[in-house]
Amino acid sequence: MKAKSPDWYKYNWGLDIKNMSWVENTESEVDYIIKQCGLHGNERILDLACGYGRHSLEFARRGYEVVGIDITKIYIDDAVKNAHGNGLDNAKFLCCDIRDVDFDSEFDLVLNLADGAIGYLENDEENLKIFDIVSKALKIGGNHICDLVCGDYADAHFPVRLWDAGDKTISLSEFDWDKEKRIMLFGNCDIAYGDTMKYPEIPAGDPTRVYTIKEINEIMCSRGMEVIGSYAGYSDTPAGKDYFQMLIYSIKRQ
Image (cartoon, rainbow, N blue to C red; front, side, top):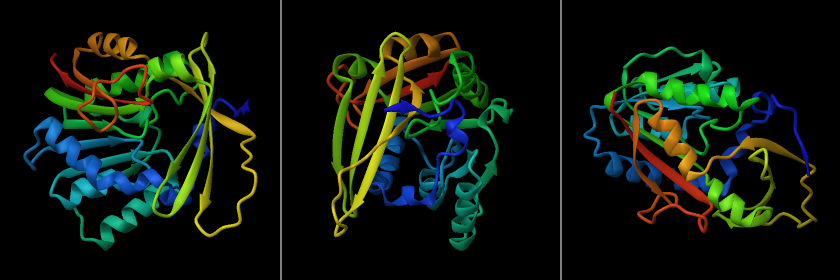
């Protein structure tokens, strides 16, 4: 599998992502975040790389004030349409590169979910800017949740192919791994139930910088953040080399 161009993240997206199996977990993921962070319903939330707003809209339905940011216009247009259609005046959406926002101590919770663009940018320097934006946007005592591919798992298990069966589709994901550069290539193929099965072809992958648990701890600490817990996805199980996904819960201390 070859790598897409370094600016792949600007052009890679379509609303067919709504059919992917993991979209079905949105409500339970929001339940988990509310419980993990001890939210009360009056918090202000920033959703970075929000996609078509599935988490932002779910938080807004529950009464939270939410600002969603994404670089993809069709996603933001769809999110705005859904917010207006459902009377969610507490959900606002902006179409821009998340590096261009300049919020300062304005939010109680910042989210980078389903990667939230972490690791997507052209090089390490650019990728670290996302963590700067997170820290600056949070109030002291504010929470940050990100869910990412676990670099410890990548070291132990990549390259690998994984199947995921949802209610509407079955998805094949392929992960190649450059251990020295810490770059994962991710490609996937979605097959709707009832469609004729053909050999899945994944010619090119998204180049993504993947972080270990230790790296994330160091990055957060250097930005006045304290990692409270690292979990194997939306669970109470500690993250580690045997679990593909890691969810990092941090608090801004200074």
